[in-house]
Image (cartoon, rainbow over all chains, first blue to last red; front, side):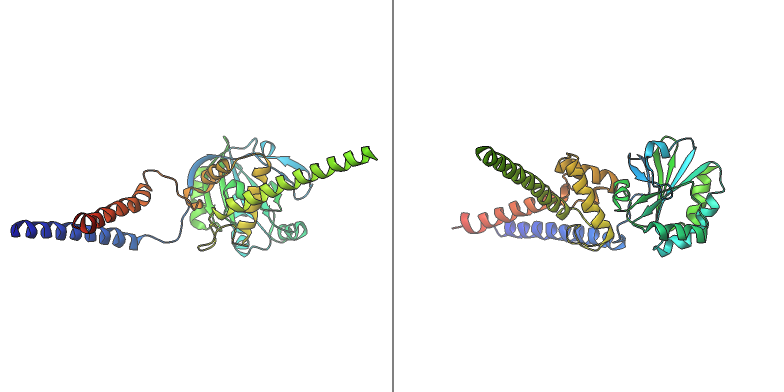
Length: 179
Length: 122
């Protein structure tokens, strides 16, 4: 009887020890994980259909007519009030020299005259600028905010997404795909 | 006079049904936005947040409801664009089964211990 009790206590002790070790290992491993959510940036997703107004002509254009006749497209969400957009602008100007890619600007929640002023001041890298006054197109595209850049291939698949302003590293990545 | 009454009744009924349908959509928009995480805020739902992201998200939810999408279809659309993380209520799959089953398991174990200790021994 006494042996049985000792055995039972031992079993309980071992089970408890195993349980706490398990908890410790799980939590300890979790310490090293980043607690900032990082969304997936590489994915092959088909672009949604949308229609929007052109910034300059104010004509309504559907996405079927925008994503046509180019090998690659870069859809860049920007705004004149967004400071990081100013930093990345020279990189977009650089990209616009590449003939295999068509740059499309999506002007996010912006005042059209400010947007035009911005492009006059820093140059216009886009072959087309469409507007997203309420920010709904960006949400439907799966964007987080400005600036954000999507690399799209000719099958209208989003190959890569860059959240935040483009830097030298992302520029290199884009050029590697474009070549 | 009678015609006017009938006309008035029709107008009133039509207006009320109109109001109730848009109210339904309002309620549903609120319900859905409470279950959607604001991805650029910390610990806030889209319903609570006033960020640009959340304001646009609420507009998109309303637009989708007006297009005739159901609540689940909207969740699925957002999941496809932003991933599982955007929904506060995680679905049952191989990544989340511990989350769902552990409380039940602990409840059963606790219940068994209480049963053995206090009820059987009496």
